[in-house]
Image 1: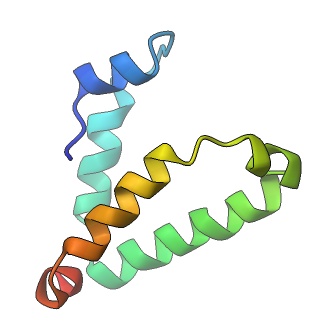
Image 2: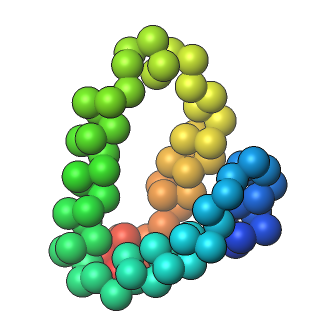
Length: 81
């Protein structure tokens, strides 16, 4: 599943900063694979600090399940890329 500015507007209709998305994605894509993983790990650990356990129980897991299903279907070679 790929995300576009239009899909972001659908998900977050009140956002005011959609012009930052392409620049952020472009910057991320310019990083090496190791740096991308490091950035994702940093974001993951920060979310663990800032999200309360109450918020986690209220989260809609439908999106996570879809993403995990997609990840499980990817071949090992694609995972390395």
